Image (cartoon, rainbow, N blue to C red):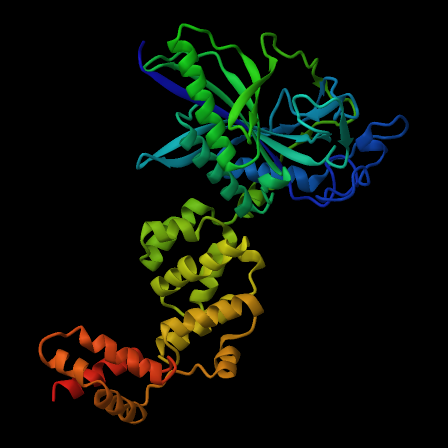
Length: 481
């Protein structure tokens, strides 16, 4: 059989960061007690329950479409997508079936060392459904509970073209999408809370073929790792089936995170008939050129542009710039620290190394960090001016991270000021030389590494407060006399 090629397209649902739902005034906040953020409109109860469009949600959707290089529809309209499911209270979903807000966009990822554009087929605005809470295993549970708090929360669905050729490319695309949307501040994109959810359409075909193979749709992937592992498994499963002479069935499959495999949920032999028609309660809205221009101007510097500027303006290695611009909050923190301590590479090293290490260990993000850019800049000044050693600086940073105290306060409280006075050090160095004749003899006999032991003894005498570089220089002068 010919070598097989992977073909993946993603359908990404992203909840928008509005305070209220898409067509009513109920709170859209995450985490409330089930069924406490509902009203007659989002529950679809009879009576005077006309929907009213959340204008902020519309603007967020247009900003996202613009940032993803989409063409914007001249008219915004909504349609009813009719189907019955337990988490759909009205029996239909208000969506954009006939005219999405954005079409024909793209996102660029770096794959195999090259920039690769991934097409965006469309971006549309719709209301979210409720959430089923399964009692027991999702595949064998006898019943489920329904929480309608999420019903009506505004979300955008972003549908990619089938341009992805591996699980890794799908992961990179999803990460880039998340980074752009978080830069725009239109969503927090927390996959663990369901504000960013992804379904993957996966198929394989003979390499070189232009025809698409039969695809399966993967659901229940709630992390970048799940997306990667789910697609990897499904590609291997389909490839094995075809190599053994079998046939790939068009079906929806569930990603079992614990077992790390996909399981069949339902067939897709028949296309769903949603009987869509324009929503009679939501008249079309024209998207004026003035409104689009204003939203375009409100888009901040996006991650790719900021990365290139960091490389160009601060002479940073591309690797550093990629990490520092991964989130808007981290990039802002870096540049605000530079305003206090304008040494780009030093700030990069401390931010990427020590600070991100502490954040990762604590499971935190930069936005919740107690250390401010000003305080980090002040700490780096102390290290540069040799008030404290680099090792002392790391210890102070850890204390700052835990307590939120300023570096000067910690240094003074713990008596960490580095000894750089040659007169004070000369007496200690002379005593160390007298007490360690063997090391002195070794050094003078050509074993230059022996000076390291003597430096260590001076540091021990001073409880780590001596300037190690100065101690090293003064010791060598004394030993070479």
